[in-house]
Image (cartoon, rainbow, N blue to C red; front, side, top):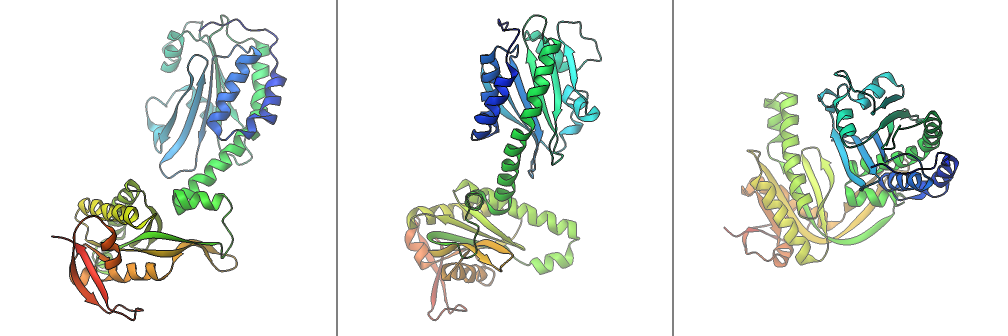
Length: 380
């Protein structure tokens, strides 16, 4: 991995690239790729660049991306919550930098002792000669660590370290902007769903900003939730609800739908598209959710129609949702599941769109509707 480099490589040119071009790249990964390539082009004795940072995500605690001169960017590494107790993290250079908040330097051409992090031995065996890492300072206080490695004989000089520190200072605000965008995406997708979250981030945030779309609507809730809360300890009831939500969410995601809301013990999801495609996806999701019910009793109501999709609410507090008679009908049909002792019910309109056979379960005058509704379910 040894490479001839210029001893007077230009750190200012790298910083100028960051300010002019790097900050405009589409994401953090592209920026680290570009930074590594720019360092190599300037002749810096750097063969590996890594950025590791905390993130705001319900599942992922730390995200790391690495550029390597020989291979380019390696896959993004995500560490889940609780990784701090992992033996591979405890005593690692990143843990040391995080704990001490001081830079960490190790010349890998020198002998490594039993107290040195095990990963340094692995890097040395790959031909690396130097390791330098330091924190990046963010106004938000979010910790991030910038790491560079050399494969050049002799590793980094003092002048190299000074230039790396100079670049790190310029890198901090650039990374912070990418981090803010990533946090916004994570929060929007976690609370609104991938499709809706992206629309909000793209500027669809004005009250009354509504689209009319065609979609299959899925509405579901747990049967006997009042009784469950009366008989179970609060933490047990919440655990049951979360198992139910996990099953519904996995089924909806697997079939191209999007959950818009968790309504107490219920779920509102949509499957946009033409009638045949949307309804078949929604029915497949309903079946998958029921197959994975894990002993939880819940009903699912399905319908297809036009819905108003967008922002509603008060002047200061808005919500992204779907409205319309199609949503109301799906809710009324779902409300019949317990009385009719059926796990999945749907409208006649929905039944005509799906490719599988159905059967008539009942005819009902549903609240808010002037005509009798034919309620159908999957064929036995």
